[in-house]
Image (cartoon, rainbow, N blue to C red; front, side, top):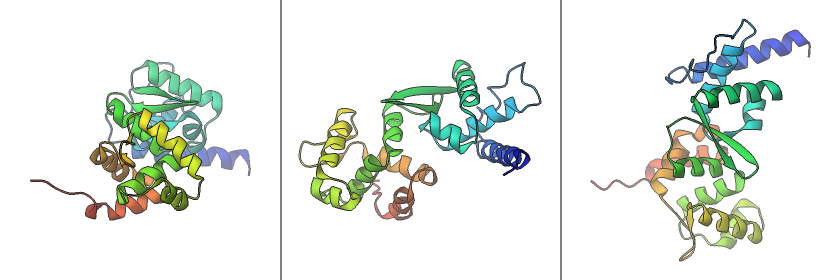
Length: 205
């Protein structure tokens, strides 16, 4: 692929994600006086739009999905965090990014784990079947029982799962809301769950 084609694809990607976040009042807040015609402001607006629609995305995902370079991504994210437009949360080896002030600590933690395949699969399946056992989760997700046990312990430690009597999702209404709202930015399991969610949500007037 020619450099011209790569540049065109990058610009199209940046425009698309900037448009996705156009409704957020945060877009444009990362603009600096030294922005030039090379696209610095466009790149930052695209990052803001991307993070608004994909909250909890880690550094590499932001970089790869927006087709940015490593140094370029580091520079723009640091600028946006310093400006108070985005906030960053450490999640093990990852740095995850969120629009500033939009999510509670629990929601940020939940979004971080919902962006990891096995923990998300566990939470989605437990929301569908609250009586599921560790072995059933392992079979459903195609992982070992030990893997489920390890993640269950981790999810318990961060407040997303209770292991007091089997497994139970904590604050299930919040987790369901996040799954539905950002379903398109998760995997196919979340999209399928969102399609079926109307029958899972109970109203208590």
